[in-house]
Image (cartoon, rainbow, N blue to C red; front, side, top):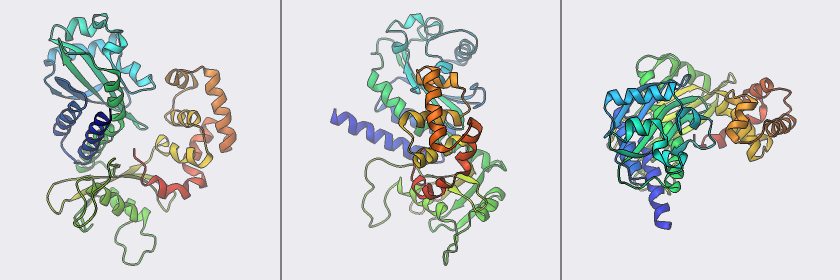
Length: 374
């Protein structure tokens, strides 16, 4: 068990580093599949990017998967016909991963896609991982085994679920970096050299740097959060010369920061190249309500259940949807909301969302949030 835990920790740290590579999407998808296979052996992977608003696939990156025609039929089944462990079901589930064998109690042929597509293609069990965060669902990862191989175990499903957020972070970084490089005015992009010198800065980043400011620090060239995120990104790929090795459990280079105008930003760092003096891309974008929810949770001492309800409210889910996601009754959700409103001084859902940005308690938590893993 200890050996397995250590192996899983190494795989997770490797995926964290991959998420910060700034690699093209095909390379990122292939590397994630290779790394995950060391903890969850499989014969193939398929990573799809999706439209976060509709969850419809927008691009696929397949290793040893199905031909294009069969893949299109899978999408058709997904959007038009009922089946086990669908992406829509996973999006509502408390855990973002599940195996087909688990959903069908070991009888894979109960699944339409298994009978019609996967079994004729020589495949057996599949493990699906929903890739989403507080801003939406950005992708779907499937790993699958060939006929005759063992089904995925509950422990393997649990590990896949545990790295869903890390893979989502890498996927989101890649999409943001591509958008910023293509001229997306909503995403600020800085490219820093090894000494934090600015090699490139787009217009959005230039404006946001002015909003962040340097806090009057003598000799400061950049806001502290920018340098902190850049250094964390570099640390993931090895300690500085003469420094002690990083402890196990790599932490993403990601921070929340409040500008002088009161706006909250999410700041992410990714390495652009290898070598002794790697460049770092730092991306800045406006924070969404769900990304600010952890600050309010800490400020008001919400329970674990209240924390989860707050995050789902921030994502726009109704009471009925929250109840389905948490597998509790609507009355239980309403009881949690009453407690949340009482603790935070909110009078409604709208007021609660507003406080995610406006409450003064969040200011004192900024430094703690800077180290928060996404």
